[in-house]
Length: 115
Length: 113
Image (cartoon, each protein chain N blue to C red):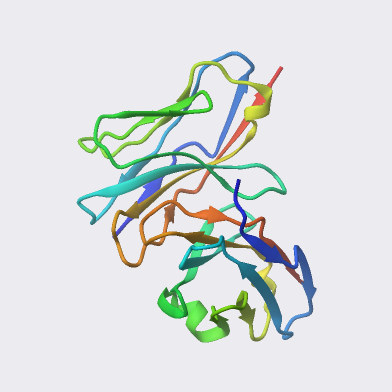
């Protein structure tokens, strides 16, 4: 089956330090679509990054991730954490072109950035 | 920014009562999903539709929930007989096609007393 693993439930960082949130996956799909969603309290979960291209870096709002099919990973990184980055981050997987299209979510990582 | 609309934002029910929530997907999005986010912040897929047809649903949804996406009306998710364990945030999402990125609404927070 399909599953996503986020190893860190909680990450606490000091402002200005680099961010790395881990995401690995298992899938039956030969062409999976990987996503990072960010969820702020009392707001809608919002798409942060997406990729289905192997070994290509994708960037948005200072965050970046590279899909590595060889290691089934899609880690989220940012060079310098900001206080406003404090939120829940979810890695998710779908089968691109899958008629069913449901997202398989990881358990989420709560990122807390402190001054 | 997502334009998925969910109502109500908050819902409080007693055990055994029906709980109904609604979702208006983004305009032009034929695929609609319902997820449950529990108190541990874990997402559980419940059901999805393409236009008015159910694509996939989990066993729990099949037994205790009813859901529909009629044409020209909001989609809805209804728990027939609420249980304490149903207390969660229910998120609706829509997409242009299966497997593509999904756009989420703000959710309906259900509390079952």
